[in-house]
Length: 324
Image 1 (tube, rainbow, N blue to C red):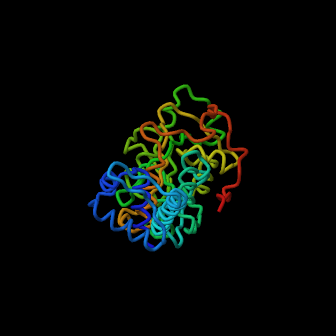
Image 2: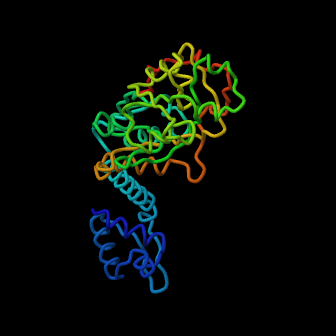
Image 3: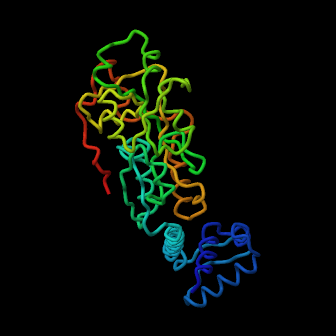
């Protein structure tokens, strides 16, 4: 007995007409008649009563019809499961993160979609420093990473949501409460990571449009070092809002500024690895989950950090990890 024979039987049973069944099956009518006769011969029963005017199911035919229909449904389901399984990724993928991007609405949906569609893929998470997260991709330390805009040309990124940005200043500077905050900030040295991936990246993390003759950059190797320079009064720094929550630093306060917009958080990979099955598939999956048009804001992003007041005195440890 072949599935094709059952398919022809079910088609005729539903149409009660050999010609219409053949049209539905996109085959010639004689082929349908031959397969039905072969099935009747194998089963040893007559399935249809045929007259010049009508076709009807016999008793055995009516009894076998729902069983045959279920067998065909089960076979179709088996094919679908096999095809989905064949498309599922296996192996391991290393994902870099900065803070709690994986727990934000969109980031969380991306990871859930990966686990749902590729349950055999092992996800490994590695926390990256703000100063190094682009370079971690370039060095091959991670395969994918949550990254901040603007990404370098070597990295392709799927935008997910936006993080507000704050200005980290020393408590001494914050207490001065300047009338013209932007003018005041423009006069201060700026702490930036030595490892920033590109000049465009460095320029985008300055608090104001820089004056090349006046802007003095304090190069550091990590977020902790940047904030230490800020706390010592050696510089100010523009940072994503998660820094106020994850990097409490004595003597550092975080200010809002209307001239400093948010940064975009995306999930990215090296452009040169886009053609790899794992990387390409997961980037496409992230693109299908990411919101279109206006990007979502992260949880807790609606809270404003008051000017001149410290928000960095309490927060979670920077060693927090996402759920495996």
